[in-house]
Image: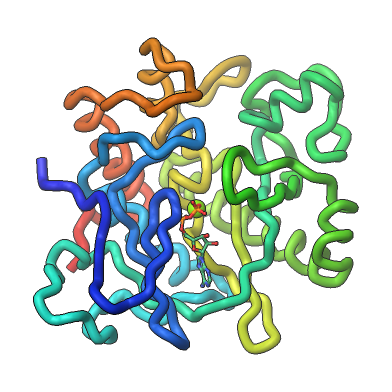
Length: 295
Ligand SMILES: Nc1ncnc2c1ncn2[C@@H]1O[C@H](COP(=O)(O)OP(=O)(O)O)[C@@H](O)[C@H]1O
Ligand SMILES: [Mg+2]
């Protein structure tokens, strides 16, 4: 297996670290570097997945090119950035994006075309997801047609909190809320339709948006197995957990351990790392129709 990039450092460039990405402030632009860190149950695990950051970057780049909407991507080419001398450029290639620096809209724009995760939990309690009433008797993993828009707050620590559309309006105003709901649902439909042709169900996803020059542009990562649930369509069977290309595999492993989810998570064994890496790469290859590469 190739070696993993767990954390990057570029001397002299201000950095902020998310759970997965290192975000460098280039002044008018940002350099987003996807590391190989993996999070599960809101914890960053001590074991990285080699090349995961590259796979996710290449998948987002694929969608930015395919989806017809204003977005933040300027370049995947590191030559556009003045890197400090001595930088190990090779390790950053394929995982870096130069993007427009935007004012982030503080809402996670979640769209669900299938009922699972926090949506499934809420539905079992009250028959709704984020205030959207759904038909009675749906099974876990049931398709939702039309897809529903179920926003959440962006929390600095811990779980994002599902909110109603009216609460979203309170936070960002009716006009912005309406535009983002509409554009998010349209993008999900378009992406899910394209992915399904390659045998992947995108069950749900989360978009982020930002203001740039008075316009709302798509930011962050897009329709990746980290921001979405990716299911192999040929194994889809509602009524339980689905096989998946995302980190469900890692979650499934973690629940077999003694870990209480309230303390530092355990290391992942090598075969779990290997299989998880293979799943991310398979998702990439199926979706894009190209073998995983970054040059
Ligand atoms: N174009 C952009 N302008 C400003 N912030 C952005 C842009 N694209 C992504 N971001 C922010 O960068 C961060 C990406 O790092 P990530 O590891 O995903 O963080 P998190 O732990 O918050 O999910 C997110 O906080 C996201 O909102
Ligand atoms: Mg994120």
